[in-house]
Image (tube, rainbow, N blue to C red; front, side, top):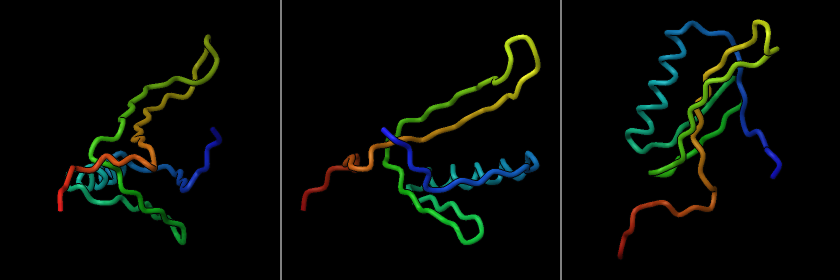
Length: 90
């Protein structure tokens, strides 16, 4: 299935600035609120369901015998058409 990037931002940040971004996302998740990503004129708002799939990955890219690039990736994933909300009866 092809990937369609809805938003992308990449920049060098101080660790404390990254922690602030992560806390904002964590607070939104904890409160069940939508998450808006914004950079300049570009923005996207997403509403993760109550139980998205959470993927955490540590990677090393580069040659097997030399220095490479290390990364930590955090990913929330869910189906757009999933109805993962709580049951309500009206």
